Image (cartoon, rainbow, N blue to C red; front, top):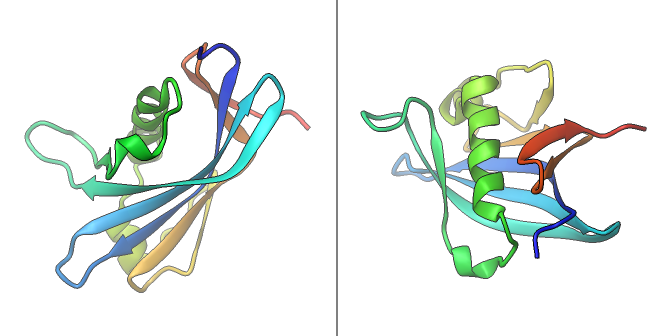
Length: 134
């Protein structure tokens, strides 16, 4: 039952293989009725824009590893937020370490970069990201 599920993204760690393929590790917490499951992690494959996609897109390497109702909607929304709204490029991050107003990037310029999300969560019921109130 997806009611009252919130997904709190913590970070995306971008990696590039020697062949040039990009992957990411998504770290997040799951909240349901105020109870938190912390330190969840999924591996993602990243694909650059093409004739079917106007921005980078993510595919969960093993969707069976996580059985959270609405996770696919969360992943698509996160993808749109990071790659379309923020216009973030994993290759630019790996090569140039760009700065962003809402996101912090560390350890860039090599084959790995980490993007942090501060005080936000995705509400499955409302299908929307929200900023956490202190």
